[in-house]
Every structure is written in structure tokens, then in C-alpha cells.
Amino acid sequence: MKKFLSYLLYLSLCFSYSQDSVLIKSKVANAITELRDFVAIPNDALNADDIDSNLFWLRKKFTERGFNSSILDTEGLPLFFAALPMDDSKPTILFYMHLDGQSVDPSKWDQPDPYKVVLKSKTEDGWKTEPFSDLSDDINYDWRLFGRSTSDDKGPIVMFLNAIDILRKENVDIPYNVKVILDSEEEKSSAPLPKAVRTYKDLLKADFLVINDGPVHVSGKPTIVYGCRGITTLSLTTYGPIIPQHSGHYGNYAPNPGFQLAQLLATMKDTEGKVLIKGYYDGITLDEATLQILKSVPDNAEEINSNLAISTPEKVGSFYQESLQYPSLNIRGLGSAWIGDQARTIVPATATAELDLRLVPESDGNRLKTLVKEHIKKQGYHVMNTVPTKEERLKYDHIVTVQEGSVTDAFRTDLNNPYGNSIVKTLENKFGEKPVQIRIMGGTVPISPFINELKIPAFIVPMVNPDNNQHSPNENLKIGQIAYGIKLFCALLSTEM
Image 1 (cartoon, rainbow, N blue to C red):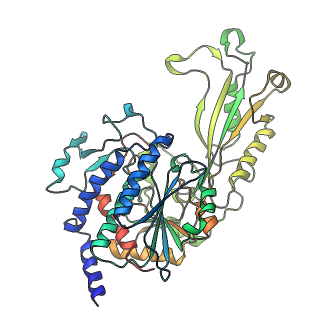
Image 2: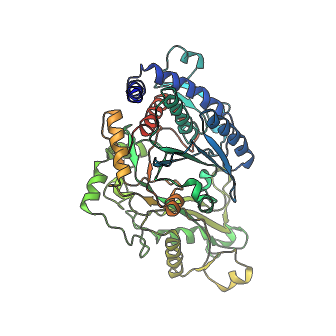
């Protein structure tokens, strides 16, 4: 009875959606302080030296909350693992987040140091910097914290820690064993993760996985995502003269690699954006029940098009969510010779296109890369994986060097999974509205190793505002989302599935 009354007290304190909740606001204030401290530790995914300092901070903070923690060595940078004391009678929930962040170019940020969090309020003219002392009396949930990884993904880690504080303060008996795995190479595709999950399979064993990465739906409603697309990459380079040549002397004579590449790329898609490569969309079917779920997502096509400043979207799908159910073929970068003020009157030596292929569970990344290469061959090109020698240039009329990136697989959990149903019910009960259910999101989180090795369902439960500028200058986290995240973690960790 005492335990039950304590639980009711906790619910009244933790799950009240009122922004006047003293308990929640006190934890938001503490979370802001911790997040400023955490963000101040650089975490560039390309700089291995940054990671050790972040791991030290994490070990200290998780230990303070009663977790046992370990640094797990991998073939790359280490993973961080933490767990509360285990009870074999309880199911186990495994949380995945990441501690690394995208690189920064300080000159592109509206603050001197992207690793020093700045507090800002929205005005008619843009963003106004506010002193942190103004948060001492009251916390404006519309104000934002600007800094690298505030949203992606240090913010959710800090939200989790502060939710644990509430659970401990209120003596709530968490109905799960709780494990946490924090990735240190998520921003560069987590190449060591598949082998690491195999190596630490017993340690990571769980009943289901919850990923706390990415933004909530643009509507701001509570969101659950059942999958994400995978990714792989291709780099295509075509060749003209062995060194750039004067366009007056050799224009109309030396083949231009820029035109060759443009013509080659144009054979890969039709004018409505559909991939023309044979077999690219094989295996994908959408029944009426699935289409109805996709249509239930409250997307606004006019708003999306306005934000993108486009008149007409591509026709791979008839609406936005449907388009995400298919693999994409995207030109993420093009380069040949010089442009702008540096443009020169030359026939370029090379032209390069960088492609990314977003994957869905029905599409195998290696298979799609093979289809692209076979398509290139059918256009009359000799395909190589190295730079051609002079002898090879003289032998073949058209040469393409293709360099392949690694494959991160897609994943998708069944929409009727009981753990997913329970999360949906928890979100609906705690926030008073039905959550947005997204079958698969467009971005990539490297979760497939957990699903493949641990054989468990996975769900993405995002915490941060959709306009957070992740990966870009001026990344930010809305303070109200910190309160939301703390409440959400409290709800997940106190509601038995």
C-alpha cells in the first residue's frame, strides 16, 4: 500500500502537463546546467581525442544516479554502457543514444563558440541572446539553447539522467531492468557497431530497444517511429583530358567529363524523380491498411512545399510519407574544375558526383549498388574502382571510377508489436493526445545491428523540436522539449508494458 501511494504521488508530481510543475521545472533548470557543462566538451565525430573527455563526464554522471557503467572497446572508438542493478523477474529495456556530434565551422554560427551554449529568445527580427540569470526566477519554455549537440544527441541523454533523478527522489520502483548504450561514432555511420554488438551480445541482451534520437513530428505532437531508412554511398568520377586543357584550343575536341557525367546521371531518373534503374524498387508493396497509417500522419503538403520553396514534389510516392517507403537515389554533391570567381576557360580533367542511396528494409544496399554499376555499364562505360592509367584512358572511350561506401541497413518494427502498442498508450495517457505514428523515417540511425543480433523490436521515441538545425550551424534545443523529454522518460520508465 505504501508503495502504491508513493507511486500515485509520483504521478501527480511527474506527469502533470502543467508548466507550473515545481518538480519538473526544477529538473529542467538542473538539466540546462548539466547540458551546458556537457556541450562544453567538444565531441567532433572526426576527432577521436574528443571522445575520451565525454566518456569521463558520462561515467561520473551515470554513477551519481546509481548506474554501473563500462567503457566498451571496439575496432573504432569505444561505446559507453550503463545499467541499473538487475532483477531477473523484470523485462529489460535498452536505450540507445549517441554522444558524438557533427563537426563545426564556427564562422557559420551566430555565436563565438558552438560548444558554449547560448540562451536565446525569438523576436520579430530573429533571435535575441538572453542572460542565463533570467532563468533563475522563471523558465520560459519557448526560449532555446544554442550549441552543438544540444539536440543531437546530448540533450536527450541529459533528459534521461534528470528523469532518473525524479524516479529516485520519489522512490518509484521501475518495472524494468534499465540498460543504456551510447554510441561514439553515430555521426560517421557507426562502422564498428555491428561487430561490437556481436561481441557484447550478452551484456546488451534486452526485450526491446528504445532509440532517443531525432526530432518529434513537425506538428510538435508526441511521436513514435517504427523504423528508419538505411544508407550507403557511391562516388562516380568521369574523365576528360589527363590534365585540364584550354577550352579555346581543345573545346569541341577533348571529351568533357562534366557533360559525360551529366548525361550519365540523367539516365538514372525520369523527369518526375522516379529511378529508372531496372529492379531498384523491387519487393516493395503497400497494402491499404499500411497506406491508411501513412496518411494518418498529420503532414501538411502545402507547408512542406512552402518550407522547401518547391512548386511540385517528385512522384516516387503520391504523398510525403509514401515517398519514404522507397529507396532513394540522391546526388548529394557535384564537382568539376572551378566555379564562381575562380572559373577558368578550360576543359576539365574530371567530374565527380557523390551519391547517397537511402535504403528501406526491402532493399539491400549492396544489391542496389550493383544495380547502379550494371546500369552504368549498359550506358557504354568501363567501370573501375581505381583511377585509370594512361593506357586504360587510351583503350576505353568512356571510363567511370566508382568508389563504394559501407552499408547501414534499414529497420522497421511491425506496427502491431505489443511493446509499440504499450508505448503508444503511454504517450496518449501522459500527454492527452494520440501520438503521431510514423512507419519509417527518412533519416538513418544505425540500429540494425541490435535488431539483427539481439532479435528484439526497436522503436524511435524522439524528444527534440523539429526545427533544431541538427547537423547545421545554430543547432538548438527548445527548453520546453527538455520538460517534455523528462516527462516522457518518466512515463516510459514507470509504466509496465
